[in-house]
Image (cartoon, rainbow, N blue to C red):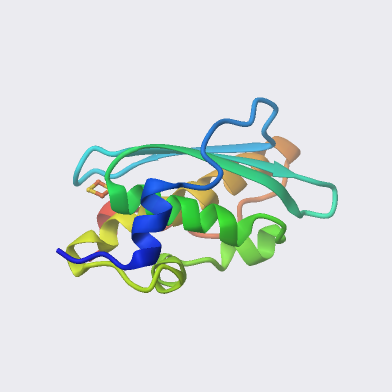
Amino acid sequence: MKYSEKVMDHFTNPRNVGEIEDADGVGVVGNAKCGDIMKMYLKIDENDVITDCKFKTFGCGAAIATSSMATELVKGHTIEEALKLTNSVVVEALDGLPPVKVHCSVLAEEAIKTAVADYYQKIGRPVDFEIEKAHDDE
Ligand code: FES
């Protein structure tokens, strides 16, 4: 199996790993296929901008690399933009993933959306978007 340089970089040196104690939204998702788990923390300001984003993944290298890239892609952006972030965009930003590893990238997308849904629930905003489940992929 061959991984791109970017995947290797984000796997060996993942960005935004950790927890945000006073996070505005938290999303915990699991991949039913492999049992891997990801927790995503978002800090959101009054203009719906994601000012900080951290994650923790108990999972494979591809899941770590995609979560790392996904946090980089949503940080500093609005919720609206973050909700448009699909796993294919993340995979593209990493110069691709081996086909058998693509399902791992869905975890990051799902975790971000779940964290936004958590935030919406907290502030009483209706959750008006769908969350694609990792195990529905493929
Ligand atoms: Fe589980 Fe990659 S093998 S997320």
